[in-house]
Image (cartoon, rainbow, N blue to C red; front, top):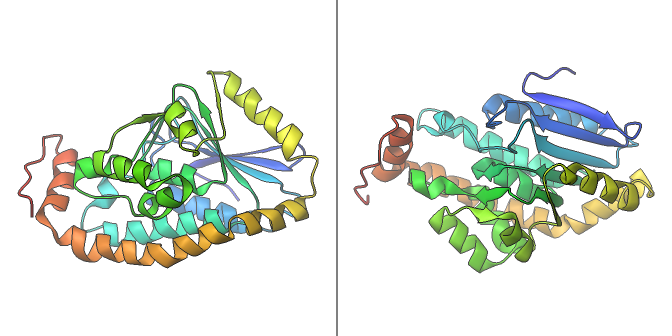
Length: 258
């Protein structure tokens, strides 16, 4: 299958595959890119020798997030459920997943990285869910962050929209390893060669399903309610629509607090 928004690179005789978000510099997660990620994951389930899927971004950055244009009230009812299905597909995929992150990892891009089982970070990379600055919130991060890190980190990130460093991410248990610049690729390769390739692809799938069972249960329990809170309540508020519209118009928002 050919892809317009992704670059797919197989490594180690097909035991490892890189899924590159291929729309530099920002690698925005559009509805089209989400659909292609879902299509790849569905097709890849038949690759029985696959031991690891790596998600990364083309160029200097991992991903700036989902398309703000697709967050407007006339598109968000289609976009948001599709995004949540894509995250669910990553979480439930039997093959282990790893996010290799450099540069900015923001919004939906950060949520995609959270959905991966492993995160390897370039030392200067930055992480945030800045949705509050647009008057909205990130449902996937709201579901996963308290479970994967802690409630304090989740609350700070969702309420402030602040950018955290790779070291911050390591300190709260969200990142496995940090490497400087070009050393990140070698760090990932060394981990793969030592910890992934020696094992059975079949056994890795069973182990991955086992270790992610609780996370999948939490996601399924909460994402529908979070989606309804977003679509049925938040998007009926004046400020949520003002935040999106002001961003697209490149002007400061005028909050009415309603």
